[in-house]
Image (cartoon, rainbow, N blue to C red; front, side, top):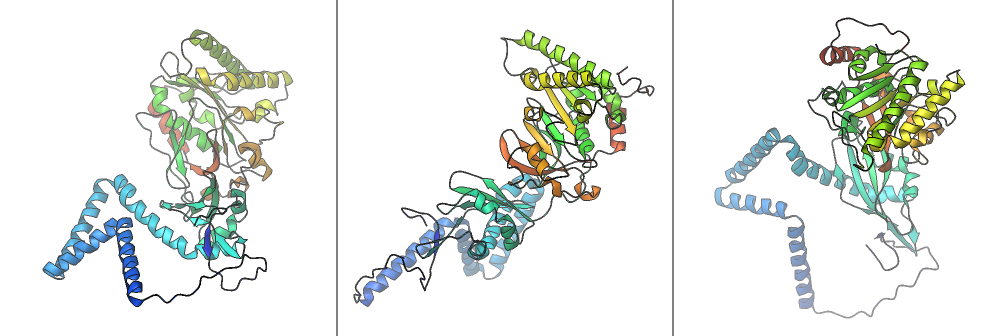
Length: 485
C-alpha cells in the first residue's frame, strides 16, 4: 500500500501504545437499508470474480472447461482432459526442455515459492526488525514476484520509506533461517527496491567434470564452470584483463586450464595466441605442447621477462598499424587475440630476488594492462597473496575472481571495497578439495555484485588428451632454461 508520505503494507494493530499517535475520527453511524447493503455486496462479489478471472485467466479457463466436460460427459470427461494435458506437457518437456522450463516449469515454481514466502513474510520481517513502526502502524516491505530456478529464488522487495539495502544485508542470516534457505544475499535494484537472492540448494557442492571442447567459441563468453543458480559460468577474455587470487589448493590451476580448454577452437583457428609464463614450472608445463604450438611458453625469470617485453613491443607495433583505422579489436588470423597467461605472478613481482627483473616485469605488465585491451592483448594473472605490495597493479584488472582466501580482509583487496558485505565470503570456502576446490566469487567490471561460481576440474588425463588431440608431438622436449624450443 502506497501513501502520500510513506510506502509499505500496514498491519492492523488493536491496541495502540503510542500516546502521540494521530486520533482516529469516526464518522457518525447511519442505518443503511438492507437492500442497499445487498446490492453493494453483490457488486463487490461481482467485481472480485471479474478481477480474479482477469488476474488468473488460465486457471479460470481450465475450471470452466473441466466443469463443462463434467456436465456433458460425467467423470470420464475431466479425466480424459487431464490425461491429455499431462501427455501434452510430457511431450513438450521431452521435445524442448528449455522452452518448457522457461514458459511452464519456472513460472509455476515461482508462484509456488512466492506462496511459500508470503506465508512467512510478515512474521520474518517483524522478528528480523525490518518492519518499522510509524505512528502506531507496522509497515512491512512489499513482497514482489518471485523468479525461481532449481537452486535459487530471486525475490524482489519494495522497501519501506527510509530503508536501504544495508538494513537487509545486516539481517541476511536472520532472513536465511527465517525462510529456511541456505544463504541469503542482497542485490541492488532500482531506487526503493532490492532483490533477495535466496539459495535453496547448493549447485556447487559436487565436483564439476571438465566441460567438452566445442567446435566454436565466443571469446566474450567462455564456459568454464557453473554459477550458483545452476546456469553456465561464462568468462570474458576479449577486451578485458582477469585477476585470479586464491590460496594454495584453491583450484586456480583448474580455472586456468578450463579457460585454455574453452579457447581451443579459437586457438586452432589461429584467432588466439597464448603466451604462457610458468615460473613454478609445474602447472602449465604439463600441457606445454599446446603453448609451443599456439603461442609461447617460458619458465625461467629471464625467459619470462623477454617474452613479456616482446609482447609489449608487438602490441605497440600493432597499435601503430591500426591507429586511425579501428577502435575495437576483432580477432583475425593476422591480428589474433593475444592472451598473456601468468601463473603465480607474485613470484615475478615480489619474490624475485633480482630487483631489475622485478622492475622489468612490472613495467611490461603495467604497459600490457593499460594499453592492451583496445588492440587485442589480454592479461590473465593468478596469485596467492593479493596484497598491494605483492601486485601493485591489481586495480588495472577490470574482472577479478576470488577463490578461497586466508583472511576476510583479502576479499575486498581482490574484489573491491564492500564485496564481502555483499556476500563474497571467500575466506569461508571449504578447504576440502571435494567441496571447495574451484569455488570462487566473481566480480565483473559491469556488475558490482559478486557471484558465487565453481570452475570445472580439468584432470591430468584431460590435459594430456588435449595435447594429443590438438598438439601432437613426435617427441617430448625437456624444459631447458624455460624458453620454448
